[in-house]
Image (cartoon, rainbow, N blue to C red; front, side):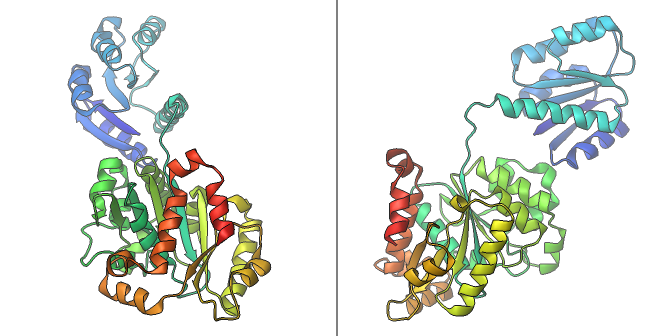
Length: 386
């Protein structure tokens, strides 16, 4: 939530800003008193304004009521050293959400802000929420990054897409699509998490195309240690409210950070290779997902590099791992795929007639919200056909 804090005391400003930023709110500080409210409201348009240094004279509520009348969706919290029943009553009539003591007990301030945030969330009738897909390999070299990046490219033909590289120590998803280094990474966004909003997130991502943005993994693996689960959770949540699709390229380790991501993901996409060691790993992973309580409807495993000449194909893998899951299969095209990876370009740009490109395009089409609206059974039929 975007919060503007106004106080005549620099010490009060710093203390309140720090407490709210720790809860991942975006906080702006303004030194001064209640007379700054109209200007701050007009220029910054925060979700919430916290105003310190109020006195208990109801006549001082004029600028407050001016703001609440002009910006009815903007919440206001007042901090007043002395409070009278008359002042509290007049504050409520002026549209103030809560009145707290000054200096504010920080926990009381945080609790008040959380109550207001919850009410604001409940008041949003049709909040936009993009689809979030988490890709993770069942075994090293399964091709999860290739699928995530090239499906993102296919989706971006018609939709806004953000690909987030969450293989924080060794991620290289950006190199599959773009020849260059990122100016910002996941670690940079986590470092300035208090600034997180749609504009900051978009500015931190590499613009591969008009519709496809990539938030890269840290260039320095040591910086990955600074990224906490709550940082990634906030980033993914913000991304899903801004982009139509959010694709998450993850590593193999199931740690608190990755579990936080999987809890939020709408679809979990384990990537399996058609060989015995990979299938065994997939069995373990699917068993863990079951123990974690993830419903089968969220699991959309992919069998990658399918070759009809091999002994193990989709029927055998489905029989072993679960025929009821919504499986998808991607054919094997090793030379074409490797050439595209080496060139750092999407496969569709170099081999547009490849069967891999065709199947990725069909997958992207099946994920389209318009397809779901027109025919809710198309996705199921596509996976059954594969």
